[in-house]
Image 1 (spheres, one colour):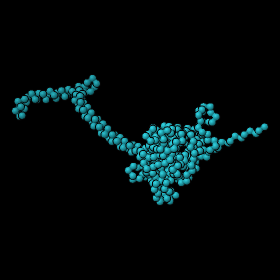
Image 2 (cartoon, one colour):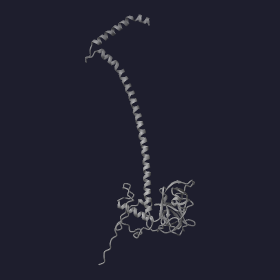
Image 3 (cartoon, helix red, strand yellow):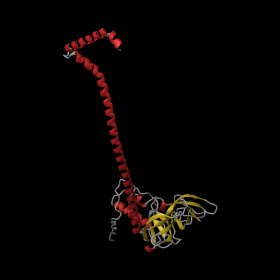
Image 4 (cartoon, one colour):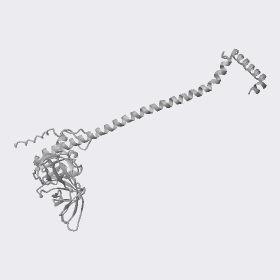
Length: 358
């Protein structure tokens, strides 16, 4: 190194002198913008480095800003998700409460219009039987429940009491293979025996092949079994075909279609009558209001007149639903229509006074 400095000493001194001279000239000379040339050179040399440093700082700052922003968004998403889950749970609870209130209201209306003396009960569990065709209700011997009493709903029959305890009872559902009850077809008046199949449908046995049973026809209780009062809904025929010894008739039970949660236990049954009036396919509160008797648009074929009084408990409930809905301008089947107050009294229309004979 020392050899190189000694050898190129003169050249090095010359270069340093030239650079010093250029620096002095740059310090003294100004550009057209009245800026010293040395300052222009310094700024030009520093600008790329400063731009690179500033770009890196911007990227790093943006990265941390986005990172903390995403952390905040994540926390907000967790909070919103928790709120959504809470709202969903509240909605499920409110829907369950509303459904329970609707069932209780329907039971109360049916109970008030029924001639039979009934007691409301709630299902509190299922039996340990593998078939699961029996339930436990919260009414027992202390409430006057006895073995063999009928268990029903406004939509149809449910089963019968087979075991009683002080504060509970075991109810055998109509779908149980050991269940049997006397039934009669609503249209043709054909008698048979309802039997459970361990499935969602039941069958009607002991109907001769020569007897007429139509698909879609309703079966009602006949009262022959001395358990169910005559005239209660059982279900609608879904399959009917000739068999080897008797007809094969399968019925969908109307009382079990919407589940079994609230029921009525018949303490003292009163038999009704069987009419040929059309029956609802589902819950009676979904029926539309009936047309006026003097309406010209009414169909030519009318149901059997009930002017002299409602024949069965179901008919009385239907008439009361219709009257309350019509009085409160409720459209049955329309979810946007406000729910009617079924506890409101129904004003009876005054009967026309006959004109005096001249």
